[in-house]
Image (cartoon, rainbow over all chains, first blue to last red; front, side, top):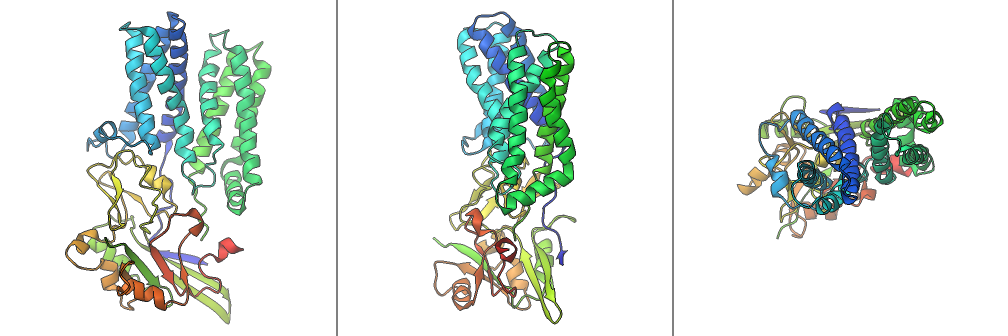
Length: 262
Length: 192
C-alpha cells in the first residue's frame, strides 16, 4: 500500500485548450502547405489558402494566449527573442510565425509569390511535424511513442483534406491514401505498445481502460471513410476528421500518464 | 566548481514530514501544490513487514530533460548543477512538466512553473536547504559531490546501498537514496 504526505505532481498538465491548439496547428500547417504548393504553381487559389492559414494561425495564437496562465505577464515575448533549437515549442512558434508572415504576403500580393511559397513550404512542414515532436520528445511518457512523429503530420493533412471533401474533387485520391495510412499507423501504435517493454504494456492497459473503445471508434471512422468517398464525399470527410481529431486527442490526453516505474 | 547534490538515508527517515512543511514555509508554496512530498510504502506480510518513507522532489539531474525543451531558456542549469526556473522568462507552456520523468514540477498560481530549487536563495547566504536543516533525524545530507570531505560524499561513502529514481532514464539524478529498507532496493517494481 502506498500513501502520501503531500502529492506528486502527476495530474494532467495539458487540458482541452491544448487539444484545440493541436487541431488548429494541424489545420494551419496543412493549409499553409497547400498554399505553398499552389503558390509554386502560380495558382491564384493560393491567396485563399494562405488567408485561411493566416486566420487559423491567429486563432491558434489566441487560443494559446487565452489558456496560458502567463497571459498577462507578457513573458511570451521571450519565445521570439530566444534561440532555442533544442525546444520543440520554439520550432513550433517559429514555424507558425514565419508561415503567418508568408501567408500575409501571399494573401495580399506583396512580393514574389514563388519565393514566399518556398519559404512557407518549409515553415508549414515544421508546423506539421511539431505536434508529434512535442509528444515523442518526452521519452519518460510511454504512450508518447516515436510513431507519433508520423501519425500527427499525416492526421493533420487528413483533417485538412477531410474538410476539403465538401468542395475539392482533386483531393479525393490523397484523402483516400491518407485515411488508410492514418488508420494503419493508428493500429501500429497499439501493436507497438503491446509488443513493447513492461512499461509500454502497462501504459497500453491504462490507455485501453481510459479510452480504448473511443480510440477504436476513431480508427474505424478513419478506416471506413474511404468506402463512402464516392457517394457521400462530405460524410466521408467528416468521418475522417472526427476520427483523426478523436484519436489525436486521446493520445494527447491519456498519454500524459507517466506510469512511474518506481 | 562545486557539484551540488543531496542524499536521503531512508533507513533513518521516519516520515515525520518536517522537511515537507519546512519547504512549504520557506518557499511559500501555494496550498495544493508540492515541491516535496513523502511517499509511504508498506510491503510484505506480517511479521515480515517493511514500511518505507521516501521524500521525493526535483532530482536536479546531471542531464536534465526539462532544460533543452524549454523554449525561452527559463529553465536552466547553474554551474553547480542546480536546475532552476526564471519566472520572468517562463511562459507556462508545460514543456518542462511533460519532460520531467519524476513529476517534480507544477504550475504555480502566479503563472509560471515551479519546483524544488535546493533553496538556492539560502545557499547564497551559506545556509543549507530548509529540508536539510529541519530534518530531526539528520537523514538528509547536502554538499559538493567533488569534495571528498563534504557531508554528502561521506554519507555516500558510508552507505550500504545507494539508489536513484528511474536510472533507466539516463538523467543522472543528483538526489541519492541511501540504505533503502526494501529488500530489493527502490527499483523492485521494475525488477519484477
